[in-house]
Length: 194
Image (cartoon, rainbow, N blue to C red):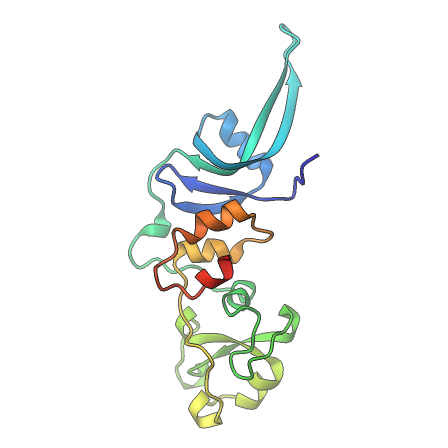
């Protein structure tokens, strides 16, 4: 039996990654004939009801990546900014405090504003980093320069495809390969895909 918790990567018809979906959503997409094609490996084999007339039971195989029909998504419009949340921020920074360089679990990290909010800093991807609670407290309402705490990496806003990657859990190798092919050439996340 397959692991029904394993998510499926949904793309648009051009192959641009859109989101992670559960197998139930994939079944609905197949049933409503919105799946244009599949790739990746067979992931789930699901059974439906039995036809009263023929006695045949419906069944389908769901692949790890499915392409669906439809128009371009808002995610690819110029100026789109993925929503900022701590779990995705911590994953962007590889669960590392960007001041002391140590790795931490999510509950031990906090969102630090490089240019402090109290000094007009914005709560946006390019102004926030993962920081352990100790470093965040020590830095306080100062800039890294004022606190004598240089950043170990420059904060960046992920592209939509990078954001999809950052939201994924237990990403299969074929899904990882597919996603990384859509990363920008100089993406700092590319090294995590191998």
